[in-house]
Length: 282
Image 1 (cartoon, helix red, strand yellow):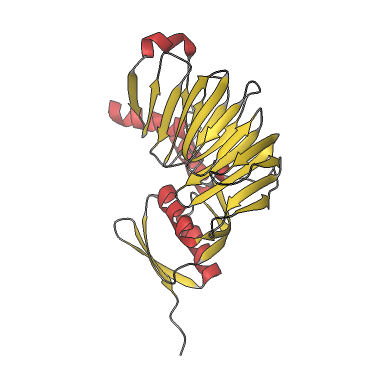
Image 2 (tube, one colour):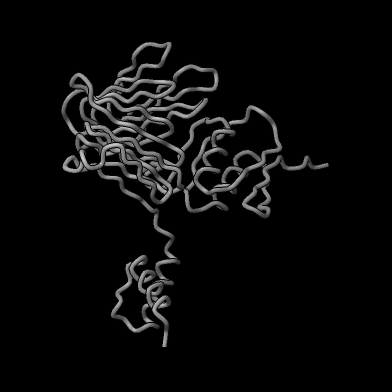
């Protein structure tokens, strides 16, 4: 007879892969194997703000599943995604922010405005209402109601508008208004370049990462965040990459980058990847 711990683990496994628990064990295992073969689903964790609990939650700090968040007595919230899976944050105004790995967001309301501070990358679905403003290190994004993505990491910045309209203002530049299907990208020389996207195209929220002439070092940093590996690059400086990768396919991601840039890679112990130029043929 199986012990209680085994049955608890087995039941959790069936629930994780959405396999009926009333099946015979052989049928259940077959169902699990089919789901595994189809690919590991992308995890999404959720942080929800409930105004009814504001007073009780004041000054409380909660730690859970690699993320932390703080509830203040007013309509404010802060959350950090220190894991690798996407973290959905339901903001106090009814808007939603999906945080990428290594990203944090804070929300407050002031003088009738909804103010958000972002470090890293987040996908927003904004509920219509008063002015909604996202501030990062390299840009300020203003919107009334729309769907857009903000990428703001050291040395790399981009804004993509999928629906509605946003305005983007860099610290030392002019305001740029973006309708749905357009974006701006911070280039290697520090200027902003207009980009165009298919609003229906998949994004990192769906587990797919697209790059257009992106510095290779930024691409490799994203690989490290998404796969929990350390990449050691022994190659030419100043290289860039145009392409994509999926966040649950490390070998595929490395193969795509190496094929595009004529490089090779070696997966070493302790989650370490060595990336280098192909030897010159003699």
